[in-house]
Length: 192
Image (cartoon, rainbow, N blue to C red; front, side, top):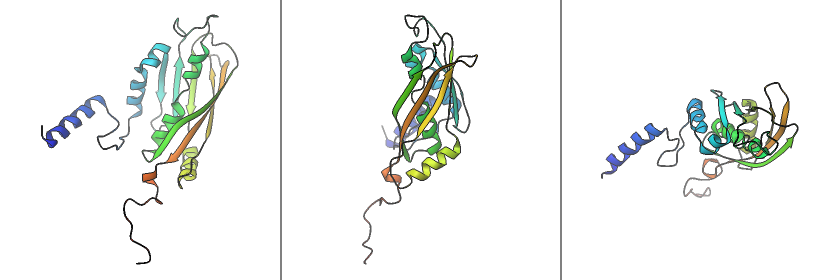
C-alpha cells in the first residue's frame, strides 16, 4: 500500500473514532462533549456506576455522579469507599491537561480522602480548575521545573450532605522538547 493511501486511511479512521493523537505524536484537542461520551463508556466507570454529567466548554469544570447500585455497595449497603475514591481519579489531571495543551506532562501524583458520612444514595462531585490557577501553574512550569499543585473538592449527596473530602496532587512539567532552553538540534558555537 502506498504511503499516501496509508495516510488517507489513517485520517479516515481517526475521524471516525475521534482519535486525539496523530501518527506523529501531535495531540489534537478533544471536544468536551466527545470526552464526556467516551468517559461514560469507559468500562471501569460503567461497572462502577459513574457518569460524567457535564464538562465545561473551557475545560475548567467537570461534574460526575456515582449512582448507588448492587455493584458498588459495601456490606452496609452504602457506597463502597473504593468507588468513592475512584470517582475522583484523573479528572483534575484531565481538565488541566486540556487547558495546558500538548507541551506539558500532567499526571496524578497523590490523593487524600477523608470519609465523612455514608454514601446512602447517589454521590456527586464537581472538579474545578480555574483559568487563573492554570495560568499560575503554566508560569511556574515554564522553566521546566516540576510543579506539584493540590486541588480539593467535597463529594456530596443531593441534599448537600458531605460524604467525603478529597485532595488530589498533580505532577506538572513542561515537556523537554517544548522548553525554550532545550535546543532542537546542533547549535552554532556562540564564540563563532
